[in-house]
Length: 166
Image (tube, rainbow, N blue to C red):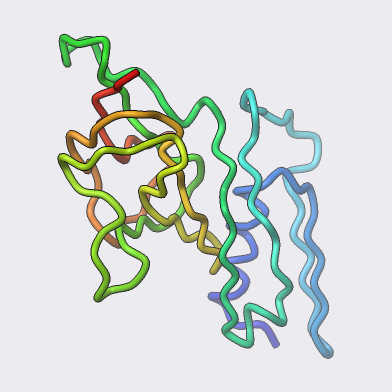
């Protein structure tokens, strides 16, 4: 028998990925989740890909770390109110929980004033018990961290304000 929180996580998985249907059987229990039949799908320029782990790994409490390939949509120019074209925002490529550090007792990946390169890991986003390392994909200096550790973030939500360097 599946627990309600496991079913909710499965629904989020279908919602956050491009899969149309998810069917999982465990013992005598079976869950089938389908997207709205007949609905018109909406695609972004490049969809974020979230690796899928088996329900057995989830139920056994195993955690998989996956590097999220973040698209050019991840970095957006800051609003004109910043008065400087060199500012950009790193935005969330998916819905998930924001973690500023690899563990509770570890130092954050980045903080205000830190220099970042395109491959610098700036945070971890947890989605469906998968921990996705998010890279800066931009060269510059972190001006401000825009979200709190442990906060639920939405797709496209700004995470960091960065002053770009060439």
